[in-house]
Length: 81
Image 1 (cartoon, rainbow, N blue to C red):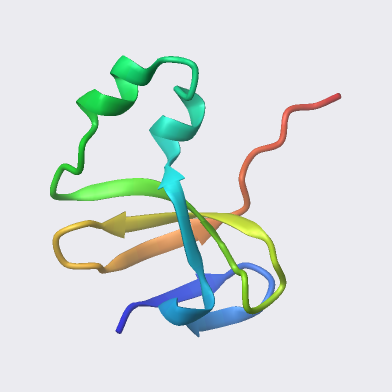
Image 2: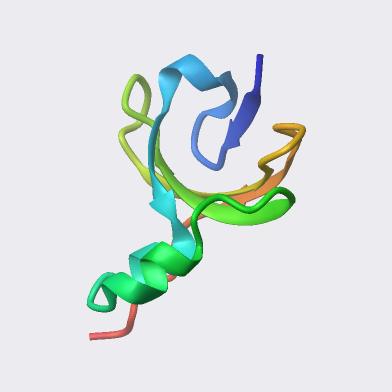
């Protein structure tokens, strides 16, 4: 089972989270072709997940798609107003 360290709540099992999408896809949402090019490569990727059964925060998870190892998490960058 994958353990995701929430920046607010600490380490939690993956069942507390819901996958959002790959971080690149989140930034390229206006370009469907860019999203299709990044189907699901094996290796390290940054993804957006939501801690749905915890604090409710959206977090960025650096995860290996082949092994499900988690390198780390962080809060998403929010542009200044």
